[in-house]
Length: 495
Image (cartoon, rainbow, N blue to C red; front, side):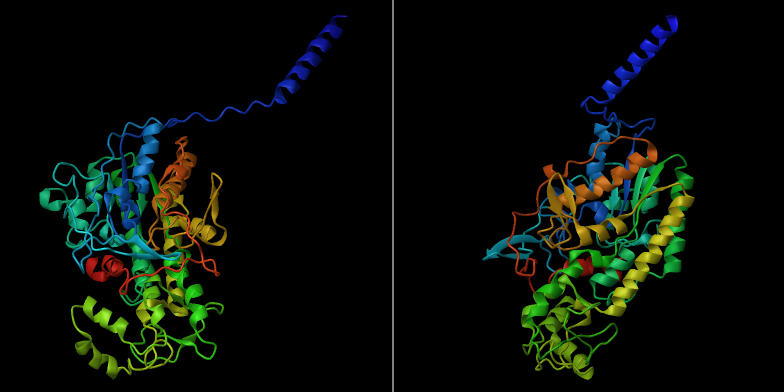
């Protein structure tokens, strides 16, 4: 009898366990927090992507949504006692365009039907330095400096004294003239490090003209190793998270114009374009629609309406940017076989300029550089116990498939995709939220934290929904000489 009672009790317990397992109550979610980690200081190191650069400018209303600032907010929600996350806020409308002295940021300033009119609108500046440049005695927590390549991280002698470096480092005020030394002085226990994109992006944005090659892979490997050596040796217990480099062909600066321009090439014509290193007459040709076609950059969208016209408009704009005139420039052009009385883009003597296109060899150079750099980043990160965010894989997937967040679809399309800003290179407010979340996912997985993700849907949208053309692309009207500020940002003279 006694064993029957025992069997009955055991059977009843099993039934109760099964019934409890079948209830529709949700499993308990992980508790928001830092786990067993402590975060008292967070520092972010990088370039324009880290600074919160957006739509060809740096300005406070965009910087508020920089991915480091968003990460800092989420860390605080998880219990991190990091205090105020300091950034070099440029009062709107932001930084100047070196070629005009007016604000460099681009806006949608009007419409032609469903076509957005995009460009800088000559906004007068309200300040020539960050609003907290003179009141903050210590380094900024966001040490993202637009334009810097990997070598600038450790450099304390030749680091550029023009551009935005003096405004961020403020070495004239007594702070170290070094990104690394300023970061180390803050004694962070969490560091995000995203450098290397400018070692290939300047080459790509300029159509392979300035500079005329990405950073040598062996040099990049040596410099990246030195950078992580310095961080790990100085901050032996810090949690370090590095980002790798997206392929340049995954961003709308390089993917927007081809499907817009291809239908405007008459069936009897090809687009004649200058290949890499070809200064004058050129017989290379494309329909822009074949497999592995060269890519017209977003800068070229402004000149696409001039196809077939007898014009030297691009060369006049290029001369003005160099501080000279086409009259002074034209003898050299004529000597190279250029004749602007020929139909622009459709004649070998007036070809589409090298600076506005990535040819197959340049695409291969950029892709090879990205692959080599990312191999280095993965190896060096592992050797230094740093976590890795695979932005290359992430943005390749976005380009191919898009992503869905809270019921909304985000893509790599220019403007309509709502990930990239008006310059087609840097993220929008929501794009930076998406970048922040990729960092947070890796931070949580690598360090046993449960930092909440950014609510991307709560961030400002780039614009109202826009009508697309029949090819699914938004056809913007851009000013001639569009994005000259990017040329200055990424050019060797700014390095």
